[in-house]
Image (cartoon, rainbow, N blue to C red):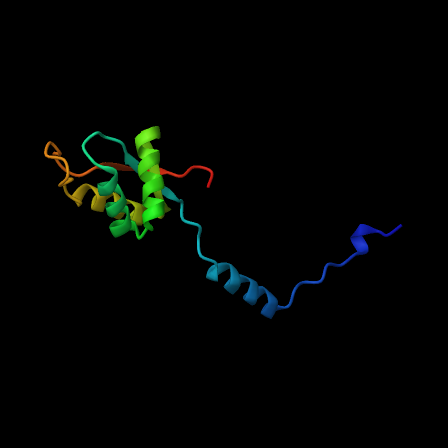
Length: 120
């Protein structure tokens, strides 16, 4: 049986310690993720939603249609998950996008919110 008091633990060389610290400092901190949520209304057409998502988010038309359908059937859709600052910018761009020219009664842009993407 070995006497634990007699066992010596070798200290890592100073160079190894320095490299570990540099590596830990170089690791980017994980930023919390946020969803941009687009909410349903009766004042905008599928065409409006699809074009808006293509222009503001770079989604292809097929993805825009899927999200427009989700907004229509579920009442909301997550159109982007990103950093808080970027999510707030995209929300603001949705709010500033303007009214749907295909609907005379349309009063303005669609509504979007930002919410924390918990557990992601």
